[in-house]
Image 1 (cartoon, rainbow, N blue to C red):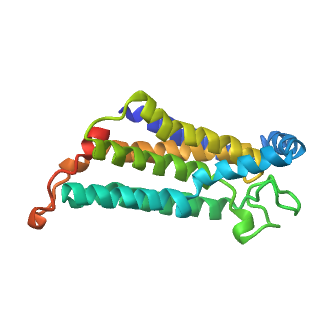
Image 2: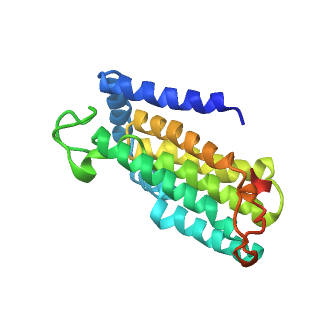
Length: 229
């Protein structure tokens, strides 16, 4: 995979952040949120809320990843099977959470003033953690790990349709529902996509079965993760 794409993703994320700090695109965010709030009939809104659970890291994505990791570990008798899970957990923990705390941006449903602004002095704690969207960043990383594990369990690369169903469709649904339900501003979700793509590409490029390990009583054998790379 080309590194220049990763550099573009990081540069785009930094540029978007700087633009928002400077006060640009805030009116646009508010217009999108206002439109969403004005078009929320019950059935459509609650359907969107249900689909938005596809991005629940602790309730869905991590448990599924743990199950697949345990299955692959048992099938291959290899400690390498746990590496993608560890990498995803560490990368999301040291990036998305700290960035949210640093940015201090409220979500569209915040009832205080200046809710579109970064470093909002009127919001704190959980009410000031909208940027970047954890739904988007986490989903890109964890669905990427799930795809990697599924390919390893199947013993072959995913087909184009399988790749789309696991790595693209859930993320696309989340992008729409996080904005429509008012969980995030449009630019929050765009930032989450940029950051998530960068992180998942880091995980994808690691040659998991080639990492030097001690013998570990045979548990250092290949885990077939390379087929999903």
